[in-house]
Length: 243
Image (cartoon, rainbow, N blue to C red; front, side, top):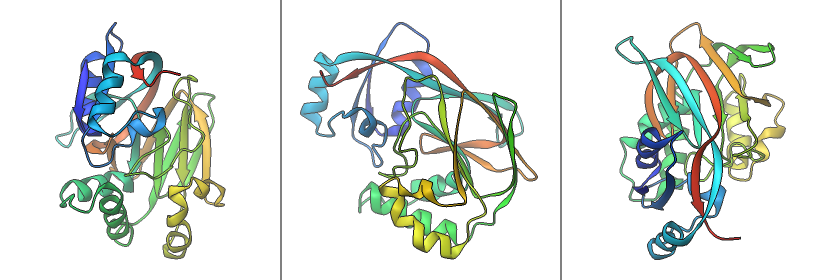
């Protein structure tokens, strides 16, 4: 199965084939193109098509999130790269409503900047599979299977997509000064050294908050908290460049 388009298109395909005996290939023609960065899949059409035809199969994990729709119903969605709770959902909505003429990196960074200065952090509870939890005012909870997100931001720099664990990036009660000094570091993965950022590895993540926070999957806002993220080992077989 070949997904031709951006990360949103890829997500639609993933939701049709996850857990099935089907090879997944992608020809990235979208704005963010974050998924392919983790695997070295080319962004040029001809080169990506060649990988789709002759690439080596690699078995990778996938995420599955249960959440509440805007209408209040329970829903579930698969994802291959990243899901998140908090400001990222609002950033995705803003970016998807903008012109993409300047490219993915500029579009997502502009959306991030605009939303950040409007956003108010709220009380969030995050529970992990070992029984531990984190409580407090948070900015974002990023549940990553892949490394890249938001048009080239290296949000989970140490994520391994076939290790059976999410890299959960907790961004705490950061303010405007934190944003100005740390935002450029997002593209190099150096933000994880900030004292209000923590990375926890877990195969299951429960997120709830005192108010309904937006949930984003693969760059698309899908619903609100409460949410339960579960990692499903080996749920996808991806065509990647040989070697």
